[in-house]
Amino acid sequence: SQKIEQNSEALNIQEGKTATLTCNYTNYSPAYLQWYRQDPGRGPVFLLLIRENEKEKRKERLKVTFDTTLKQSLFHITASQPADSATYLCALEYSDTGKLIFGQGTTLQVKP
Amino acid sequence: DAGVIQSPRHEVTEMGQEVTLRCKPISGHNSLFWYRQTMMRGLELLIYFNNNVPIDDSGMPEDRFSAKMPNASFSTLKIQPSEPRDSAVYFCASSPSGGGANTGELFFGEGSRLTVL
Image (tube, rainbow over all chains, first blue to last red; front, side, top):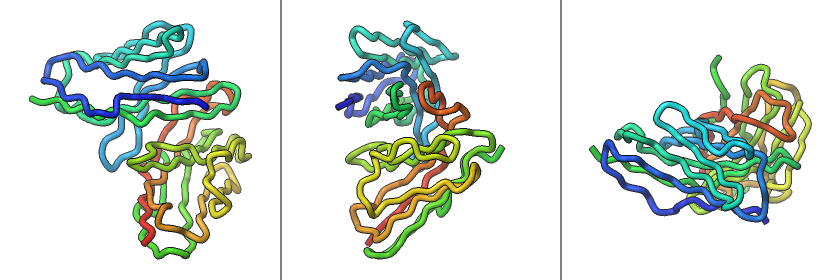
C-alpha cells in the first residue's frame, strides 16, 4: 500500500536559519506533490505544488524539490522566523484515483 | 469568498447518538473531500466527491459512516451510532478542479471537533 513518511520528531531551529523538512514515499509514483501548513486548531493551508517533471519550485522564502528517483521531496524555509512555527504536511495525489493522501506532518519550532 | 464553511465547530455527544457534520464548499469548486485527523493516524481521507458524485469511499471506516452531497453547495457526514473511537477533528475541503487526476490545491475548512463520551 502507499506510504508517506515525514519526520515524526519536531524540528527545532534558530531564527534566521534554513529549515529543511523531508517527505518520503513508497510504492507509487505520484503525478505531483503538495505541501501544506497547519496551525493548531486550524485547517491545513496550501503552500506549494510541484509536478513530477519539475525538479524545484520556489515561492518567496519557500523552496520545494522533488526527486522521483529517490521518492523524496525536500521543503526548505530560508531565513526562518518564529511565525513559521507550525506543522507542515506533504500530500501526494495518486493519479489513477484522484485521491490526495497526506503524511503525518512535521512540527517546526523556530526560536528567536 | 467566505471559504469552506463547516458546522458545528465543536460537538460533544454520548456513545450511540447520531452525529451529523455539515460542509459548504467554496462556490464553483467541483470536488469535495472529507478527512479525519487524530494524533495517532494523522489526516485520513474518508471520501471524496466530484460534481456531487462519490468517487472513492474506501476510507470510510465502516457502515456507521455515511456521506452525502445532495447539491454542489452542501455535503454531510453522518455517524450513526457514534462510538468513543470516532472522536477526532473532521475536515471538509474543496478543490476547483474537476477531480480525477490533477486534483490540485485543496481549500480546507476549520474543522469540526467531535468528542464522543
